[in-house]
Image 1 (cartoon, helix red, strand yellow):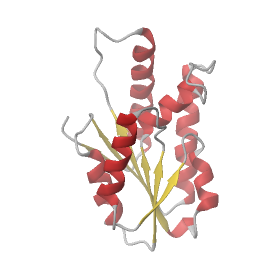
Image 2 (tube, helix red, strand yellow):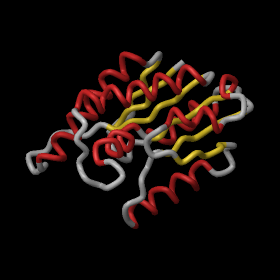
Image 3 (cartoon, one colour):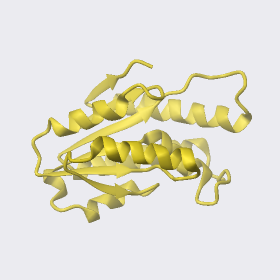
Length: 171
């Protein structure tokens, strides 16, 4: 089962996803963190998220792109619940690659890669809660930001169809 939590920045989607994950009675609860730390703001965000989930029993796996590999790191994955945070980071990580420069992958290839990775992960666990962000277009966006937002929007649309349940947080 896939539950998708979608919302704007700072809309409470992480907390909702944690609550949904905790509501599933599972012995093993995993948190797959996809955020690539680039600056102090990123480090602060990670600290805030770690503090928010402290004491909730999550086993954290930090995996920037190859999330399907998490299954090999889990004890009894088919009996586990997993929270994937966040698709927006995953899309950005695949778009920019390890070097931080735009990769030569096509948009369709990135979209299919993200969906394939999530599908594979969901088939290997009892339940998967997926967090993603949505961003409104902005006239001030540069070409790369426009591309990123369109990619993420396309992934989110496809994930909404793939998911068994979709939860939207107020932006």
